[in-house]
Length: 293
Image (cartoon, rainbow, N blue to C red; front, side, top):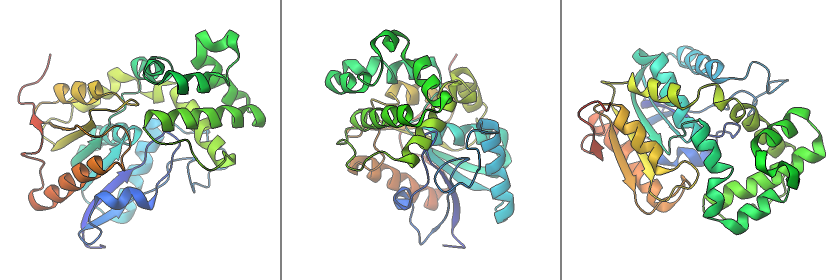
């Protein structure tokens, strides 16, 4: 709705794109929903998707979009990398943010990356074996640097092979079946951007993300996290909530990382509808009343 409550909905990745499905959490008759494809992603027309592509540039892009739309303050929401970006944007432009609704926070640091590219294999050993089959045996002990190099060198056949395996591994961790469609140039571009970011801890790192969140005291912030999340583990939401006095944490027992699982959709719709009525997230979830040290 053009005159509805403004909400910015940030997609994840890094490297994914905005979609109509992501709008299902917000009532289109009462929200003015703003989405965009981040640099190099989706329908972005960037000639070189990696050039000038970093977290600070994305934060600047968000602020320019807000100013161009004439929005004074908006609710900002996102999942996974989108939640990270939302929190860091709010820390940089606090006066422009009315509140934050953050799902499955990604902390961007070594702990998250070592889990995704190693530790999680203990949960799904068969799918992990499928993934590492795309990696030469001599490179598997130092998997991440090898992955980053594949996408930095830019050999099309190698990138397609790795992107296909990476996408299947990601789907498995979300509890989804293997993708039915074949990987293509768009898939390669998505994972090339993701590798560009992950190789550099998304130009942030866990300490900076947590520090940004800790500066949000006084803003209404709700962390929503699936108890079964194998991509961004529940400890991420817990750690963020503990770092921010007054924030709220809503656990979704039946959900993992997939934002479109029925339980997660219900939780996010509940939070979005509650915001429209109260401009806050109280009394949803647990509340942290004293800062954590």
